[in-house]
Amino acid sequence: MKKILKVLAQTFTLTVVAALIGLLFNLVRPAGLQLVAMAAYDIYQDCPEISKEASPVKVVHLEKDLLPFTIIDARPVTDFLNAHLPGARSITYDPIRPMEESLLEELKALGPNRILVYGDMEIDSGRLMAGELSSSGLLGVRYIQGGFEAWVKSGGLTQAGGEQ
Image (tube, rainbow, N blue to C red):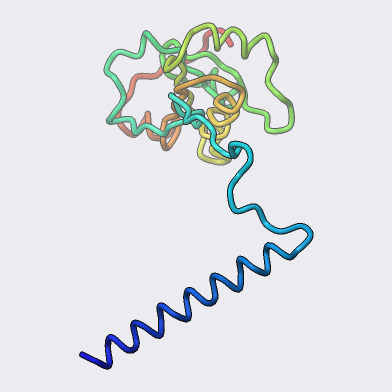
C-alpha cells in the first residue's frame, strides 16, 4: 500500500511540475497561447432537419399508391418508350450536363418527399440522378434500389410509349 501511495505522489508531483513549466513558458513567450478564448468559437453548425442525401428504397418497401409522387425515369428515352412505370416522366440522366434550373424549380415546388427516381443498373442512373437532385436542394428524394430491373422482377406494372 505504501508503494502505491508513493507512486501516486510521484505521479501527481511530476504532473504539477510539468503543468507549471508549461504555464511559465507560455507566459514568457511573446505570442503565448491563449488559455481562455476571447470570443466564441465559430465551429458549430446547425444540424439539417431533413437529409440532403437521396435515400434508397427497395421495391418491396414502396408505397402501394405512387400517385402522390413525381416518378422520374433516368434511363435513355428509347428505354422509357419501350417500357416504364405508369405515370413516370422521362428525364434522361446526363452526368456531363447540369439539370435545367427551370426543371429544378418545378421539382422544388412539389415540396419535400415527393420525388421518386429510377434508372438502369448499367451506370446506376437512378441513384446518380437522385443524388444530383438532392445536392441541388430538393429534400427527401428517393431512388429505387436496383432500378427498373428490380421493379420488373418484383412484378410491378409497366407501360410503353407515352410522353417524355
